[in-house]
Image (cartoon, rainbow, N blue to C red; front, side, top):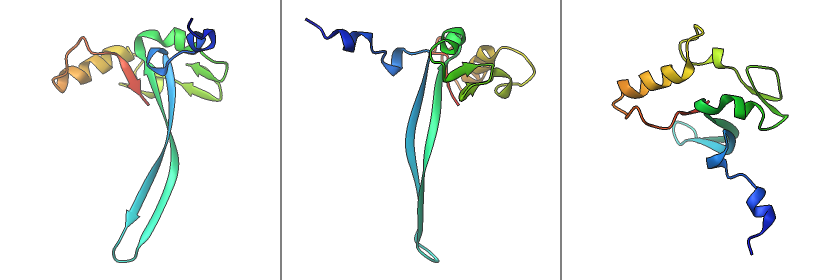
Length: 106
């Protein structure tokens, strides 16, 4: 019988929004050796499910204040037009199929 806890756990690929954490490292060998690294965070958000993403966690919000937030006005044309339409135009301009997933990494 499947584990109930595993069933209840949402996989990030199925979520309306997901945070991904990682490390970036830069290294230079000349003229002097130098190396540093730092932590980064990226947001993957489904543009067709912004309302669902807004309800996903009390720590995350769409178009309102929260610890982590995504504001549509900060992306795309920044003129109040549809962010999804902007993403479709960008994909089409680069030869991507219009039926592609409308998920955005911020």
